[in-house]
Image (cartoon, rainbow, N blue to C red; front, side):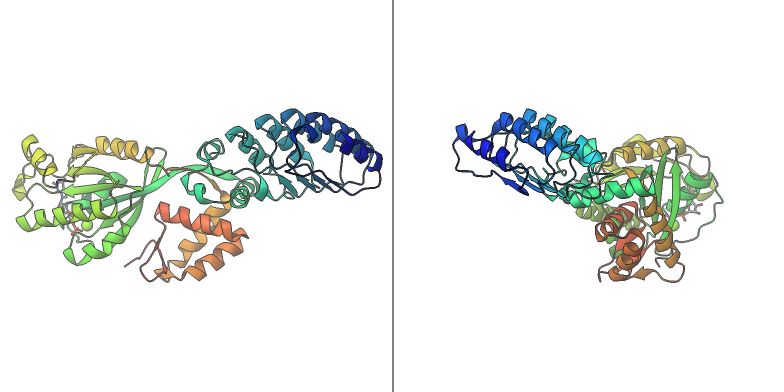
Length: 423
Ligand SMILES: Nc1nc2c(ncn2[C@@H]2O[C@H](COP(=O)(O)OP(=O)(O)OP(=O)(O)O)[C@@H](O)[C@H]2O)c(=O)[nH]1
Ligand SMILES: [Mg+2]
């Protein structure tokens, strides 16, 4: 304790306490007792700016005592507690401190291996209102359990502490809303009944008129609490290869089949299915057969069970979550299909998001650009997004989210396509 005695006698005149030495023997480290001595001094004198207590065998109790003392201190800006024995309780004490302290800019907690997800979570939460501390030397917030506690999705796994805190602060600053949102893709050969099914799902209407889809038709569908961006793809072969770029795992895909498909249409169905499995091997696919009530005027009869089984086995990779027969004319199977879409969507990893309101404002601005153009450069997107959100990390998060929602998509030339009027 010789070091501490020296420290206490000089504490009214020094600006920095540096006891970091990784070569010191265990018996020479200050431990929790040393924190008690230092805490007493911190309460009495207001000259210390830097505290460096790395490698000092300090545990939760010592950390708690220091945090308590620092609640009444407004000179310390920098605390290094690396390679001690601090765990979740110590972290919670520091988190409490950071809720009221706006002087400290850096706390180094590297190498405190007992800190778990709860400790990281309380620290991250305390920084929602603290704009002074740089979270870079705190333990990682992007571990799965901590992200779960913070209600953040998989996309934050690769983000830094700074990015995570920026997002939490933005959510707090602009307010936020929880949404369940994803993409619903309808794929299948021409004339299968895709556009007709979209109308039935959306507005419960059927007009029997055939209007061949040109490229992709975009629209929105709400099923109870779930919002879906619909991509209704034209079934013609010319479009097949462009469609590929939209086949992504994180969507619900309906593959539509018409009972009286010609041999050529059956081949197209097979090609679409193969393309989906190539581009999105984990795609959540529902096989939908149309004309479930037949249409004698058009020589249609519904598929029987054996025919549906055969259809399911046409492609060796087929792995349909569900097979449903619908009729857009009579409404048969439509409610069942809606429930199935919702059920599959709810299991998508990115379906739920607590989104800052400022992101919705940005979404409006980006969509308004689509009235005059179908794509913008990545630079233009980032310029608009950083102007609105003020930080590049938030602009990138918004971009990622809009891609998942199907509002924008990366084109092969690097530009960003905006929904509506894509073709
Ligand atoms: N009776 C009945 N008619 C249907 C059903 N589904 C589609 N149709 C009719 O089949 C025709 C083709 O339907 P569409 O919805 O245009 O087909 P599509 O798959 O969008 O075709 P593309 O846009 O060319 O890819 C239309 O005349 C529809 O009215 C159904 O379930 N029952
Ligand atoms: Mg169509």
